[in-house]
Image (cartoon, rainbow, N blue to C red; front, side, top):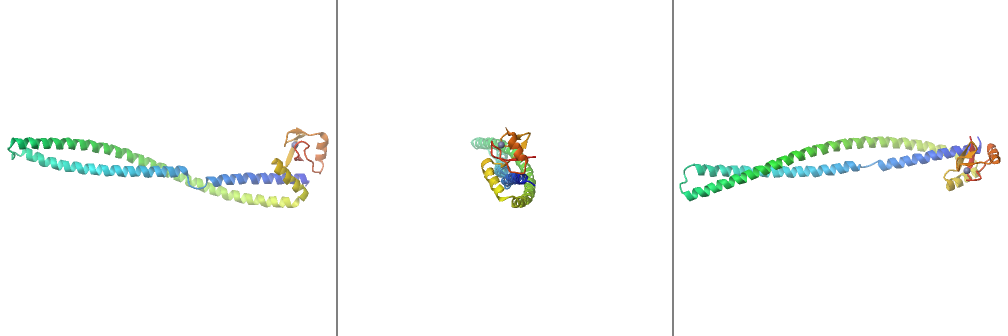
Length: 231
Ligand SMILES: [Zn+2]
């Protein structure tokens, strides 16, 4: 095999290593906690706290109503019993009963409002809880998939690096040195030649240069300096 072809193969392997390493870094950045899961969990906790608070308000309203209903029953019983004869006392009692009824109606209205809020809040907690379950399941399977991909990439990379080592060891050290230098300067050291054009810089190569490159010798593009590889 010509040294140019060996260098070209080395370049192909190194490009593959580069792209696999990028893919690996991409995966590494996706591994770990999911922002969507964390956000939804926080939101759910907040909604659950709101629901608990509403539950407490509902209970205390119910207790208060029960207390009022008892007081009202006692007052009404007294009012309609016929035991009270004094008109002033009767008027006062009537006022007390009226006041208790107004307060009871107000509280019952408030209790209904709270009940509506509890209903809405319960539905919202259930919806968020379902959303969280879905997000967690998606996240879990995504993490598993990423981990599997990562393992596969690591194996591929280790194989490729071994291949690079074997290739490099076989190539003339001076050619490797030139290759490394060009790689540093140009990104890619070896350029394919297609239809007389250097694919590195897209310049039509002089016939003499093409003829020299056709031989076994290492020829650099007169325009971009890359090592020319004729397929
Ligand atoms: Zn060129």
